[in-house]
Image 1 (cartoon, rainbow, N blue to C red):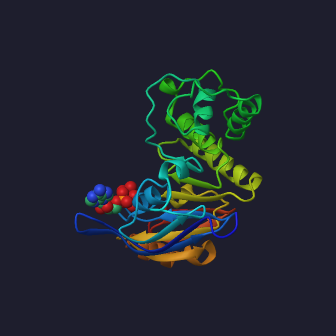
Image 2 (cartoon, rainbow, N blue to C red):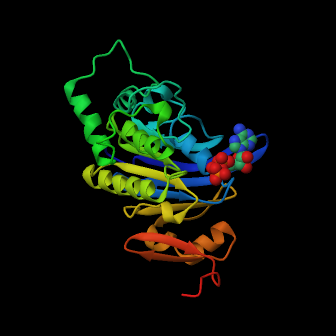
Length: 266
Ligand SMILES: Nc1ncnc2c1ncn2[C@@H]1O[C@H](COP(=O)(O)OP(=O)(O)OP(=O)(O)O)[C@@H](O)[C@H]1O
């Protein structure tokens, strides 16, 4: 697409007389992969909710995929946005492959009025393979582990070939191996879909994929810093954002954070 994938300008969100977001501006271009970081209550989910076309700002403007919120059919816009929400509601024992296919309509179940093409079935299998789920076709949603669900939801979000992928704490609850597989899968997807833009919310720097290119740090609804990771992800910015002394390191593309003076005997 021409122009930014996301353009946020002067956004406030006020609920019950309280500013949940204050004067947020942000521009995300195709091919950029943003981390949205901040302590509990900073406003991360509130911002992602709006970018996912689930809500409107109180003041300011938000354009997503070239559409101005408030002037478009939000439901239609949502079908062009891949949204990975760990609170995805599904109570049916759907096979993993079918869960991925529901991403085409962004519905909880398969749309039985619709025919799913052979290419769509193949795409579901390809996405599951990228996310390390190729050998788990017999799994059903109701008995899947949290890690299996997390990876399935990323594949589901990508079925409709969105230009924007929103990931809300995708690594929460995953064991070490599942997290590493998920992050490797996200890195692989990002390299395969050149124009994809994404925004990933997390509290944990260890949960950032190596392909993360930019970061927005929020505190009390305000932007502390934003921009390319070389400038925005430093010990100083993270210390300020979390109001806690933090030493940040980057090794082989991955970040880790510790409090100074709390390292062990080695
Ligand atoms: N509808 C609402 N009305 C009033 N306050 C709300 C509403 N929704 C969220 N809040 C408050 O807004 C603040 C920001 O919430 P939000 O969920 O965006 O934070 P977050 O950064 O995602 O937090 P966490 O890391 O804990 O998930 C919190 O203090 C929350 O209690």
